[in-house]
Length: 205
Image 1 (cartoon, rainbow, N blue to C red):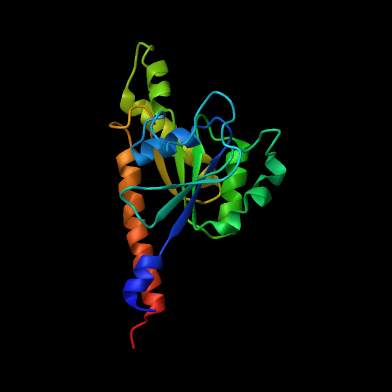
Image 2 (cartoon, rainbow, N blue to C red):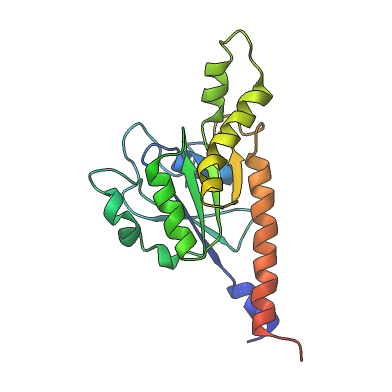
């Protein structure tokens, strides 16, 4: 296979996972630059909307396939059987989405991904909601609130001596916070993976 053919065939499958209601589908829409009503947008709602793994293609990252997984911890997808049911071994990378504090289910996902030795991001969504809530306090500092949320996300990871990328994002206020940083970081990592794949396919003599 030629180097060009290797580039054309290269795909990276990224699973977007987390508890039901964490905002996975909204995050995917924001990441793809889509509004909820746009054609091809991931369905969102107050009730469980994702019933099976659904693939979405990024308009500016042609090698990336995002998979919106059903939420963890529902009657349909219980915590104990979730990882096996979702076939985690099929994916190259993960986005673990949380909307409030880090919960036990989030760490169960992280533990499984770590066991599979696959890269992942921890993404805290609905940042705009938290900022709006905290703004009512007399001594409000947006920077302090963001730092506090980041520390909370990293607290349990540090206890396990883990240090993945952590992003604070809002699917509503996409121009602020770290959605662009998430996109740029993923773009860089995908480029690096392409280089590694091509090197393995065509090692230097």
